[in-house]
Image (cartoon, rainbow, N blue to C red; front, side):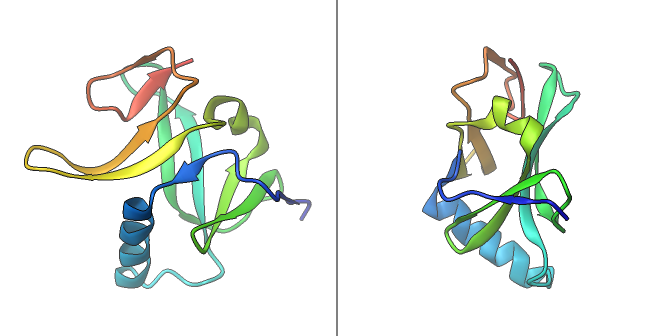
Length: 116
């Protein structure tokens, strides 16, 4: 496996999001061998949608640490995700992970997809 470990993370995760990720990892009994995969995939109402979930490292991954989590990201996705912040919103009308992406030219109303 030729994963690349980075010293500085190209994105950030808020403390509130870290807390929710820890809860999810514990509740779903995710093994420590899995890291948090952050990425993009084609689709969604604006062209790309975000990937956020636990996974094993792959050959093309960059690996870095944020808030005690091993974060995995395909090298090709960094173009779309550098500078992004993942947050957790807990409000009366909305609850869930949010993505603040400075590379997004347009986002959909739900905030889960974007165009670059």
